[in-house]
Structures are given as structure tokens and as C-alpha cells.
Length: 230
Image (cartoon, rainbow, N blue to C red; front, side, top):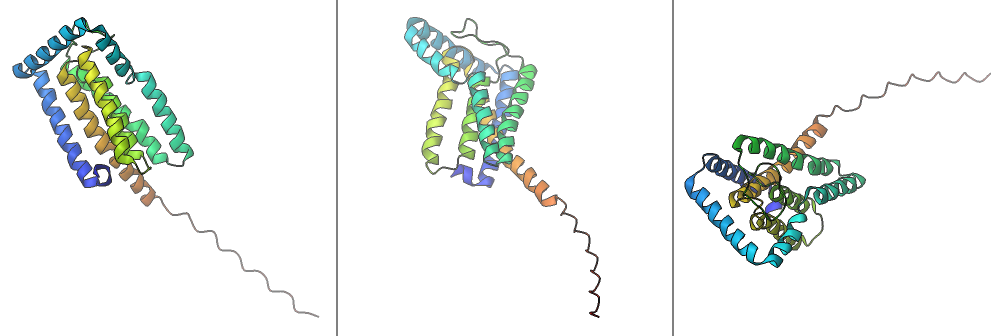
């Protein structure tokens, strides 16, 4: 399995991050084939959505599962459970990976400066690339699968992965993002969530290994011999 092989995880993480950089460059230079594809998909989503309101209502329910509040509640609960279970490194991972991913997202958004599609079917704010809903839902799923200790790991991975895929798709259907925004969110999430947990675990292991041993106790003074009997 992917999450059981650190070397495979590392190589895939680098591949996903390189792909993310490539997509980011293409978005930043307004590469015309990608821009035409984004506009065409969004136009089709707009036409279909206007003609099928129940379709839009269903996708709104899906997209709200990736909102900030539910993910914060789940993340906070996971950190508490991990601390109670005496897994501080895993708790630090659940805290650090989404935070790093969010900082990267904010930096890339400022750098690219891309605007969202106009007149979306759901409230939006801020710049467009990469998609935050897509990124954080995918990161949450990948962390959950990485930290899960129970046996039906493959089934849980497919179930949660499907949910993350639906959340990302909802952002395009609802015109909250361009398709390449979602692709960028998925690529960054995969790269960060495959690379950072192992990096955090490595740093924690080295700190434990380099921890100085406790100083030996001071030698006890020899006891005076008992006085001879009289």
C-alpha cells in the first residue's frame, strides 16, 4: 500500500509538487489552451446549473462539507484524541500540515492573482488559484488515512477519497473555481500530505535520538562501618 512505503510516498510527493508548480506557471502566464478549457467547462456548468436548480442544491450540500468550520472541528477533535492516546507527533502532524498548506495557498494566490468565475452559484471570496476547499478536504482525507490504525484502511481510503473528489468537483459545478484551480488544489494537497508527515516524524525521531541521556546520580558516600561490639 502507498502509505506503508516511505520511499514511494516521497517520490510521489515530489512528482505531485512538480506538477503543481507546472500548473501554477501555466495559470500564471495565462496559457491559452488551459484558459480556453477552463472557460468552456465553466460555461457548460453555468448553462446546466441554470436549467437544473435541484442539481445545484445537491452540490451545495456537498461543497459545505468542505467548509472551514467542519474541518476545524474535525481537526481539533483529532488533535485531542491523538494527545489523549499519547501520540503527540501525530497530533503535531494534524496541526502542522494544514497550516503549512494554507500558508502555501495564500502565498500562491497572491503570486498568481487569479480571479474567480463571475456570478457563482455559491458565496465566494478572495482569489481563485488554488482552490482552498479542494486543498483542505483532500489534506484532511490523506491525513486521516495516513494516521488510521484500523484494518479496513483501503475501504476507508476509497470512501473518504470519493468525498474529497466530490468536494473538489462541487467547486467547479458551482462556479466557485475554475477547473485548473481544483487541479492545483489536489496536486498541492497530495504533495504536502504525502511529504510533510514523514518529515515531521523524521524530525521528531532525531530529536528523541539526540536527547542527552540523564546525568548519572551522584555516587553515594560509603557508610561508616558499624562499631565493633564491646
